Image 1 (tube, rainbow, N blue to C red):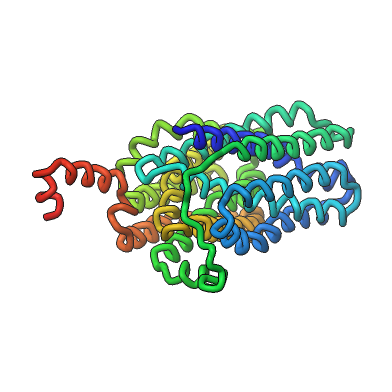
Image 2: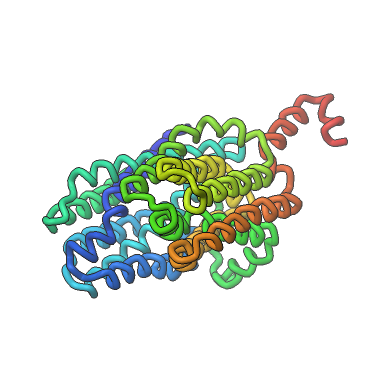
Length: 423
């Protein structure tokens, strides 16, 4: 990795570390510590989603026109102000306003950082770069959550204020680190009259492969990430009788699997067709839902149910480790020159929409109708495999199998072998 990429990864770890301090405790903070009730806490979580859905369509155009770094710095300051304000807010309007700032800043960070990674990597190194980003994100979240859990005290508001202040400080530290990054020159679209924001979105929607990938991405995030803290946890508690401590163990198993497996699976994933890797993830997650079904609908002991439930989260983690070096680089490779910011923002918008719809559907279903819940998301996981195979038919070799394409270019430069390659 070059110096720019190293700093991007350090900054990414810092932001995840800061988020880890507050994300697990946000609901408790609003509902109980501030005494604003469960409804206000639920509205705060909704505001995060709404803020992301509002700003992401604008973020892509800004990244394309101005570059990812200025956009990232602005959003980091916005997120820092939102985090600190949330730690000091004592009324419902103040909490909701601060959540809107924090949610908007967090949402735009993702495509801005992804575009910087694209600018600092080549097609051959992009999968490893995004795998490293995902590894550091989960490591940072895990460590931040662990430290935050030892600092927090539900009887003292000041302990939560400290957590949000640390989060704000991490965002500002990330801004300082990112301001020193010098990315390679990437094309920018400066002729606004010729290529309006509406025209940029129209161009994206005309890319059939990108549209198919967006549909696939919605199903991925809806069927996995959208269920972690809502439907699957509700199902575990209500149907499988999982304790809160076992639920925490399951979440830890998910993070541990990602940290342990990420680089172990990377070499395997890099040398396979991306569409087949995604299809394989669908099958792994289908097995995970079957195991979850045994945990809540089987007739084994409570210990077996708990072990099966923890295994479900671990299997999801294995699939996530396979996706991180696959999906994000594919979005970048589908983007025309200079449009990576627009494509990254569009895919982030799809993700946020799935994360907003997923809990709304999965939470009530998992709590009250366990059998239909498992059957529904088992079918969604199998649907991932079908959609991935269909997507593969629209991709070029360079997009679907970049490792093979790179080998072909090397052989072609070898002289005599080029004739057999072109044939």
